[in-house]
Image 1 (cartoon, helix red, strand yellow):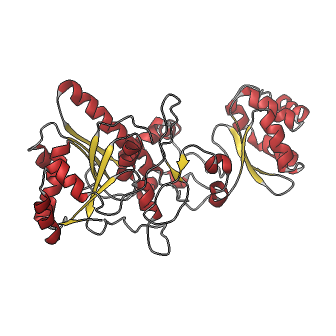
Image 2 (cartoon, helix red, strand yellow; image 1 turned 45 degrees about the vertical axis):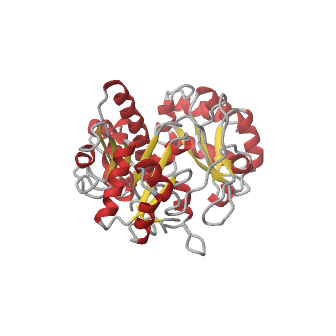
Image 3 (tube, one colour; image 1 turned 180 degrees about the vertical axis):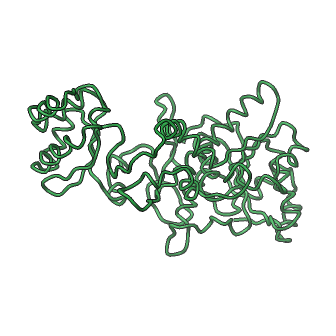
Length: 398
């Protein structure tokens, strides 16, 4: 946690990954993020992974450092309270539909400088998930050895969309500080996905070549990079991106004469050209497979580290969670009083600011934990009025 946005308050009405991620990133930099949910929790409140008590470890980590307000959003008065909170605060992150009671036009009637950042599925408003958008842009047909498509288990488009939404919110606030104008920023998952494909050259590539990129398994497109197995059975990924790394890799494996022979036969030089190493992988890979299979992983890792060669063994997530460098000794992690009751390393801000003091990560709220506080401070409701709303079941408290 860093206190870089102490004057920023945001109302968040969202669920699942992308929209809550946007609020999380703002909260990690010190913004007051007030998440509003249905009493008892929204559709993602019990999303897996869960504890044996059915407490969602997913939910409590995507909602760290936020405040929670619980309303009965099925009732007009509950919806009106959310609308009033959005207008009173002036910044709103949501993945609710474009139309309906949280449409920007309706909200802005009472707050013309309101900024709404709306995460969507498709640009036309139809629903989509990371897993369906990923299929639509073609990546599962590039993943694995084939011929079957391979879905990616990481919700990459959700996470990119969430980060983009947080950036868009701050950009819109900056514009408002100059012009006084509010407005809505719509961020469809599908546009983030296909736009990213374009930014990486993918659209241009297939249109230029007229065909799809071949399936490469664990080989890295356009580079010398692939998984290899050591003598003691450790599968490791090796990727070379600079001439120095290539030279050091060849030297570490004592393959200089063999590589020179291939260069002579084929009339090429691999010293400075990534593309040539990739094009001639049919000749290079067998050499490296044999050399790596003759060495134990610890021996190779030491040689690779000394030569600045990028490599990493394949590990499980359990392995990673128990790696001191990644977790236990990593300053982004700390302890927090988690609602689940399970004590484990909690992530704070991913960035490090040497000039600022890093605060420990904060816990996620209980559903409705801050309802009374927020309704009193944001809407100036009296304790008697809040008590009436609680008794009527319109608001919930944690």
